[in-house]
Image (tube, rainbow, N blue to C red):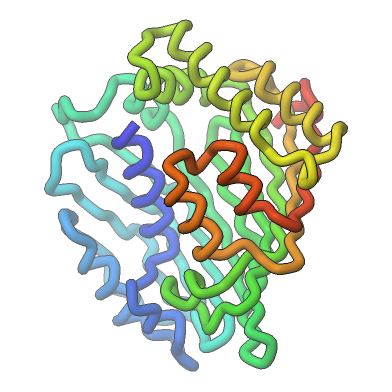
Length: 297
C-alpha cells in the first residue's frame, strides 16, 4: 500500500507542480521558470521538461517527465501539462499522465503494476482565493482515469491566507462535495492490498477485511452528522464493493469548518477513525450521501 499511496501523492504533485513555498502560485505574472524549478527539485527524481515559454498566461510543460531514482517509486510522464497561476487564482490542465513502475523494480506489487499498466490519468483544477474574505474556493477539481473511474471535488476553505500549501493548512473546510463514478474494476486489487495491510489476509479474505473496515468506519460516523438515508446509501456502497459499478454523491457542510486543529486532536486519541474521534472532527457538520448503483461511469 505504500507504493499505491506514494504513487497518488506523486501524481498530484506532478500535476499541480507546486513549490512547497507556494511562490509559483503567488505571482501576478506566470513564473514558469519557478514552476519548472519546483518539479526539478522533487527529491529522488530527475525532471526532463521540454523548453517552452508561456502562452497567454499559461505555463506550457507539455511532455514533462519525472524519472525515478528510488526503488518503489514510479516514473511519471504527461502528454499535456499546463498551469495558469496568478496572485488569486490557479488553473491546471493535465492530460495523459502515465505512472509507470521502473523496469525490473521488485519493490512494486504486481497488482499495482496491473492497475497502472493500461491506465492514464487526466486532471483539471481551478482554485480561486478571495483575499478580502480569506475564502478559497475549489470550483473544479476532476481526476479521470482512462479505465472509467472519475472523481470530482468542489470545496470551500475559510481562513486560507493564500494559495500555497502552508496557507491552505491554516484554513478550515466549510463545504465539500464529491462526485465519484466507479468503473467496477479498479477497487478489487486496491482492497486486496488494504486488507493484507490490515490483517495479513490474502485474496478474497483480504477484500472481506477491507470491506469490514469500511463498514466499521461508516458505523462510527456520528448520528448527529448523518441521517438514516445517507447512512443507508453508504452501507449500500460498501456492500457493493469491490465490483459494484455506480455513482456516489457525497456532501459535507460545517459552519465552524474542519481544519488541522480538529484533525490533530482526533489523531491524539489513539483511534483517529473511532467514534469519539470522528464525533470531535465532525461536530456541527452535516453529511449527505446518495449511491446510485448500476450506472455506467
